[in-house]
Image 1 (tube, helix red, strand yellow):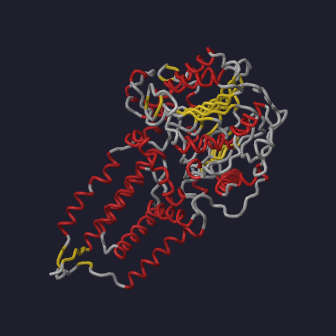
Image 2 (cartoon, one colour):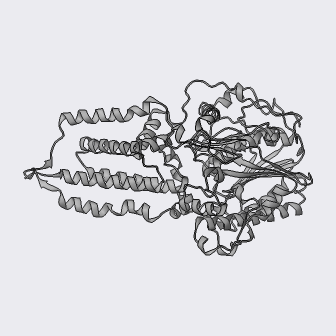
Image 3 (spheres, helix red, strand yellow):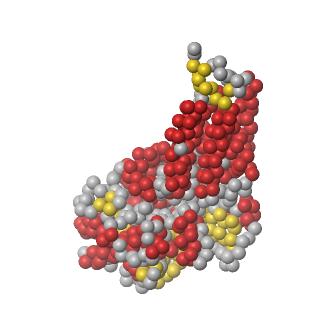
Length: 619
């Protein structure tokens, strides 16, 4: 007798219910506002998936259950680390997983494991219960009628209608229609090639030509100095002058911010999925990144109008330092394209102390100072720290902060100890520069690459809200420090003009006294800007912004009236529609950047400009 596995309707319902329960758990964990449209969208897409598996895979519903469980497992891990869902585009980053495995292991929790642990018992139960003989067919699902095929196709078309009716950011799809709709929309965007940019028509570059004041405030104040730029891993502005349990967390950074410096205290990250590499790209190119993929990984063959290249032409010896694998984020290929003469990675250093992802910051700074000392000047040194990387675990002998009992074994507690360690390493670096006679002849620039404690993590949000005395939000987390320390300048300027990482490039050109008008810059010189504006990206929906008077965070579902709009002077809510001008400005900036990157527009703009025939003014 021929055997077949046939499903009772009750078992199909069981699988559907189990999937729906897991999805609800994910929504609850990710703090989703479970509105009726979200529930209806989830149920509709689940019905389509069940019907599709009946058509395509002969009703292997347990296979669907396994696939959905695994996807949700990845989703919840990714969400805990990044605060949003993964994209198929990010498969290009899979090769980096081994390098950040400690961070991945840290976000494993009972809920994420719960999504997988039932697969074996559910599978065994269904295997025992499924009927095997054709003659036992009463009440069983045997065939799929033609009308049901038609219904499946019509259902798919109905579900896809919202996607084609208007261009949607992926986060809007998730928050409006659910996790299944998000992944289908994401996959469709990758397949059709529409995933990177919403703009398809040509965008002229004329509106973004670099304009730097020739006689503005602080113009040329750091001329003829070495430039040492330090990108601090996971440093937030909240660390400046921050005391915890009567302990100064970053004393060396505080001294730099308070003496001989211009300190920007209303400065914000603008990174995407590339995080640290995106921070490098945005600051060196004054362009927004691509969001869901790293520019370093996907567009390394582009031409770049970059800060290192301009300084290289101006006679600087341009060198980059990072204590990680030279191939990580494709730096070995990208750095020369950006204009760096040399790049020192972990392969070039003595591996005398490894902490976390690579060379310890103490060792990195010590060896970097020795190398800079051997270079002929002027020198542009770009140093990327590493030890204060998530999950912020450092050896006990380097614990310099005594934690309260309630903060032991928390990400917050680990973070304080990690940034305190990096601050001590920074202090030793400064002393080393002084001992080598490099300190007084240099401008030392420091900024955070991105936040270390995001509010999508419930524990972070609760601890930070308690410390701040107000709700800890993305505007707090994405605020990073920017300090231009010029020894002997006697500057003590705290500049509160709102700005972002795209503003770094034109600001440093002004301080160095360099006028260069050939390329595309989206940022402004913050020393001379008459007003402030920063378009926030990636960790909040595109279109979110901060300016002198407003904070606007677009709603995750893309509905304007659900958005957060705050008057900065009063702290009170204002009507979201009053922020439409800033929303449009932010979207225009981001989409134009994506267009220029995807279409390699810089190469067309600079095709007749070579290091031999262009020399920046001021040198």
